Image (cartoon, rainbow, N blue to C red):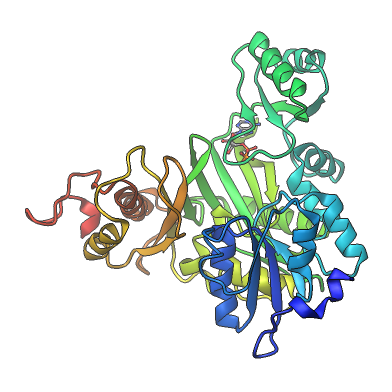
Length: 428
Ligand code: ADP
């Protein structure tokens, strides 16, 4: 049976609108589903478990593993296009589907640059994009040589399979570097090393590109990581010089075109201060899907990254990326070390009472320490100056307090709804 044309298992969209197949049933698929609902489309997901965030909300779910060729073929059958909520599908499965006529977006040949950090570094270096010095690590000798070359300031990375800081090591000595490399190589992990960049802050440039070649770019944002996990995003990045902002956006669009990306792509960057004292950037990594650094667009931009991803992979005209507020701050809600006794719903209730303008997005995940279970977006009032750090800090404080409250069930500033007026200056 030809799985691509097997009509028996196709659930048609009642409007005749597209069915988009997404590999992975996590929060990115869940939020893409929200946009598919608005556009009258159907998002079919391949989820590992019926309780996965997207499997809970879309009626068209295939349960299976992303590395099971039959499951991936099954979810693609009869869909108009296939896309991803994560980058872990083995490329050979995608190549096979492409040969069978499935519209895989982004294509396997583009996606590999988000799956393999060494392939990505090489491709970027080849086209002259700014990247840190790097090397493949096939032996401990490679590590020793590179450690010497970089005066000990190196980062070791697994080339594939890492996320949220897993698969990234910052060795403090050559011995430690060699030990990590040996352990990983022995375990069959493909390794690379790169120079440890003395960055001043981390930025992200989010773009979308359609097969037709239309491109769209949102404002460049600052991303704040804690323990390797994105904690806060400030959109736009405060005080980024105009020429650098334009250059970063142009680089991101150029990369999308050069790598033939379709859909949303996040370009994660390090801001560095050059020898002339002026800020510049180096590219850290690429994600070819909606990305945590773009969650702010759900409330803070005319077109969210999730809607844009659907429009882009379906080759529709792209939507406006114009912000709806001068500043939007996104704060991730992470599972606390100890799950609060108060239910999440009650926490949402209290949050609404203190910060009625905070926009809550929960992923339907159970609470586990450090797990991304939701995020909060806070939009600044129209008068706020996005380049004034103090004004931006007040917006950020609200977002961070809100997210902390949802995580821990306690206000970090001791605010108590029953005992009097708020103490935080951001309550005014
Ligand atoms: P992941 O795939 O887990 O997102 P990254 O390559 O983005 O891994 O690295 C995670 C974090 O480690 C980055 O956000 C950054 O804070 C830090 N980091 C990564 N590479 C470097 C580097 N070359 N120099 C300095 N810090 C780095």
